[in-house]
Length: 230
Image 1 (cartoon, rainbow, N blue to C red):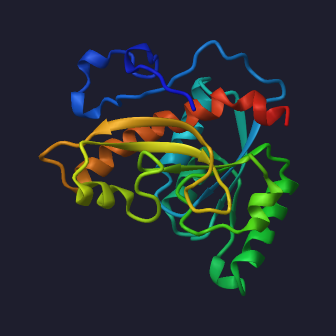
Image 2: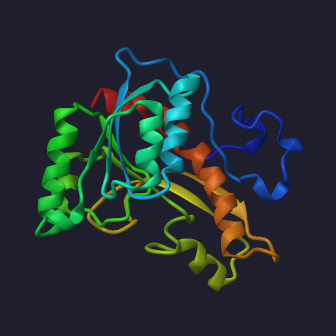
């Protein structure tokens, strides 16, 4: 697992100008990573607003992430992620989980889509469905999730609420490999965020999400050669 000091992060060009509550205590950005030719092919799965999906797109467009995004899969045609993909001109497939008899059937459809687009890695960027061995085994060590806590603490739903209820002083986010066990796969990177005495669910979730938007594309770049050569 990688750990970086925030003061060395080119993604935050002037940390002194940032609200201290917004600064991650562990923070990545890897520089000097050579571009891949051909670039990493990233498939993305999303169910909601799509802000982490957009963070990946912006990292690609800015040159911070050497990748292409040939496909976004959503399970809600009206979700924000779909709208963002339309704006960026990225191909979207709507796969409504209600159209399938079980999770395995849904995941078989997902496997077919991602394989047909020849993706190197699949990113769960706010995919609100539990995946099965069908998807995990099709992309071993190539299925990635971002979770809004410092795993292994606060696995599962509403990790921000769990952190507040537990009264911890530090929360954050984790990028990890997806396995059959929920939020228990190998950790690739983490960014920590202080929990303030004034925090409520919305304020802490917002600050954690800001770090997700930096951590996720940075981690994809950091591991790009591993997946592209795999």
